[in-house]
Length: 252
Length: 223
Image 1: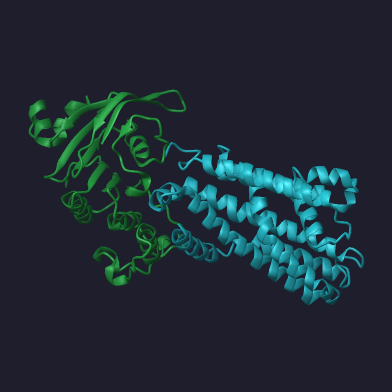
Image 2: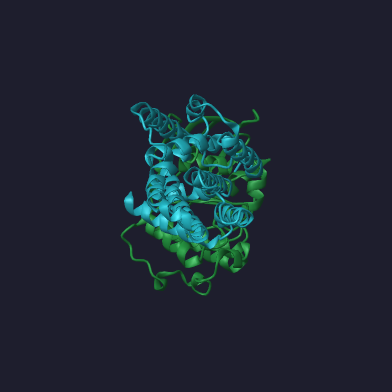
């Protein structure tokens, strides 16, 4: 089992690395946005006060887009091209394809967040004080990414073409990011409710609690986030077990 | 290996199989014939376990991990190299096997380091077929294996498939080609009218239909 997972992961890592376009939306786009903001704000792209919380929003974007583009679309593409069908028979279990893909994407997203942090450190010397937070963020991502995968696994059972799924996820990302915009000024309790539905709100709260950014972590907070995580890990596993091996949009 | 009294309806409500019963002989090449859309691939999907067969009347078939399934198309991303793809297939089958380029089938040596995107459609199919034949399984499923291959390579592949049966493995394959079909260890199953219309040897089919060629015999049975 572990050997097979290792073989599939190494193969998929080579395939993912070969397709450099995956880095565009998850690394190059946020870096370009950050550089433009940096230049237009005389080296203070985060403002002087909200350095940490603004950085979190970039991480949230990278993780969510990485999970959707790199993980969910890859699996849907594998299903539509019959890769999932053929290699499930060879490997003997479709979960192996799912988890090997997950391992590769966790690694890739971590690398992308790491390089993004390097750019931030290079362009904004004030962010040096955030080094411990950046290291903590990378550690938390190992737990967070599988939870976000659980939030978005519903895509695996939708009988939709890949281009329609990408359209839906573009809207999903926009709404998700919009709901964590500080300009909205949502009451804290609304943000806590949103954490149960919006992966972006969940991630913000997860980082805030995990890195103790707001300095007001309560047991209730931790319990709420753990409950939501357990829920999505369990619910998210259902589509994996029930995901069709054959194309959802063609007979074969 | 037996499918007994199996009925199946497509999502668009068309009935594909109506009380279908089929017997596949172990250690033989079982050739499934039938017109396009008659359900050959659907049947292979059920036999492989790709479509859930739990609770369905499929008796004596091995579990998925003992089956090798070559399906239509070559589902690899363009960046995969031939050697990497074959290595992965063999290693997933025999995780402790140390597969190197010397063990690569003769037909693939020249393209061992080529990427899938640089191969022709026929070459891609050949890679998958060779990879499937390298797996150590009990049951081999081939879905139109000769499709897209040139005459020479198709004949080579067919003799490799026959060799699997000679080693005691069970093969179930679909085809639309009558050229190069194996001559020994063969059983034909004609899928027509939502069920198996004929089961037996090519000689029996020709005798029953009073024809001189297998192609004519098949056409007569199918009509």
